Image 1 (cartoon, one colour):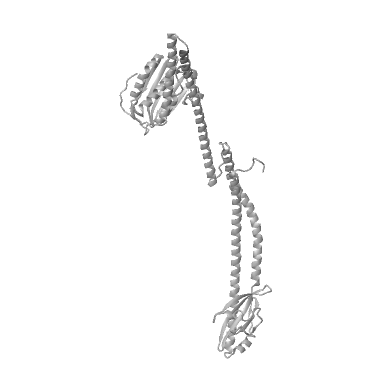
Image 2: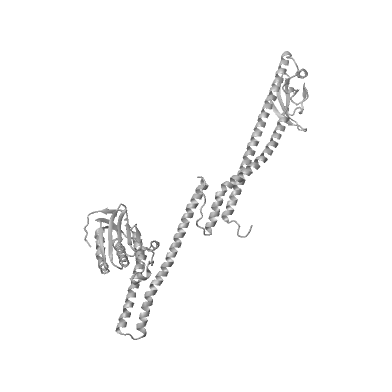
Length: 494
């Protein structure tokens, strides 16, 4: 195998499973057919042997009947006379003339008709008293005989009536059946082996695809998916693999995005603190290194004070983000119209100074919120609207009840946000127009703070914007029970 093409652990497992399936199917089939064939042949053999034993006993019974008839006509026969008379008895069956003999208790032959191929006394000496039986005898020339004997009770002792029946054909037939079955098993094993190869390959092919996809995923190709065929367990495994791969791909994408945001956060944070620190250090060095007029001192101190306040605001917002990520805040019902009018009253002076009109539309409902945090959201959104409307205009602050909660909405007529930037405006330190934002004292943390607070309320922040036509930001609120209760509350116009 060439370098770089050696199968991984998944591939080796697939190969092992393939051969396990193949060998198992061939072995199980061979064992099952062998056991079944052996049992069938032996069952047939023993059934035939039982029939031969029955025929042997029937011939013996016929001989006993013939001898009984002879005794009936000559009741005073001695055993010697009976033995001589037996020589004249002939019994013919489908197999020909039945040969028999008479012997005494010691196995001595007294007479009979024809010669038996088995030894005299081989069976009679083993029979229990008064019972008949049979014995199988295999001769040296390959012939096999069934030997039967039954007792005849006379006045002067017991004689045994013996007869034989050749069953060599049964054993030859069984041997031929074994040979035929062995040849058939060789052919059957070959056919089963070929079919098992095809079946094992078919069963293991989806596992091979899973193995290959898993190896490629281990190498970093997270977009791997496998085809799902059917609805069996392997198909279910393939479907589960696809679900797992999709989730892993999403999680890795989220981790990469989080890493990128973290890197951007660190770079932006370093940049944000570098600019005011450079100004502070520069003006402080200017005051320290050489004499300056009172106006220069005042101007330098003003720059130092302004940049210090900027650092203070930056650190405060960073602290807010950290605290929000580590605390759970209890929510309580707050009159939405009263709350929004209070926020509007606080923000109206700076907006009016910028030539912006603020309008409030709020329903008299009870919204579940943490009012201090939600005020931070509203103030940030109104302040962003102020910065986006350099030529004045109108900002609309609204509050509504919804089936699953409440909605706070801020709409401005400012510059708007490009569609490509909407997904990133809630990232910390991200600014669409960095120069304008820094000139207006922004650090890119406002919307990140608003999004985190909305998450704490079980809601979300939704932004719609069109460049040149303005921006609309919606804050969807859901309390602990997702309710927004309607009630009569007081309101004051802004």
